[in-house]
Length: 184
Image (cartoon, rainbow, N blue to C red):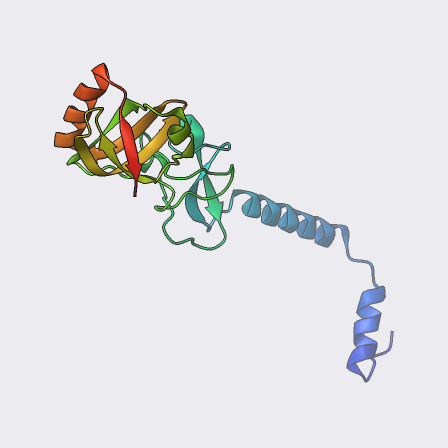
């Protein structure tokens, strides 16, 4: 064997040699350990709660409606724990796999309550959407509540969120009479 004068000749002569069995085993073991480490390597993504299925607006979230995923980059307003969302209603429809943000979830303050009322006019009940603002009017023309938020609609029944004091009064009147609303 002769010594080559250039680096490229030295590299070519090393490349022509067949590596020993011990070296190949060492290389195979190293690659197997590397693959094992990447399999158990912790995910460094950003946790976010997503809807596990398509959900309509107004539905109260349960643990089965939510799942936690890891995103490559953070999304503003997302929730990192599904426990924060369980029991809260959706303000707008949610698609499966899309991160839920603080805009998607309705919040009812402590001084507010939700009440289901039967509407006098079925046509008006069909026009209402979650998030709409209405004034509640009795059959005698008395304004029972102002600026109530529509939380959910189901046929002739509409769920409204309004101040607690007005909610009890609206609930009591709605037991005897269907109510009307005016759109804001």
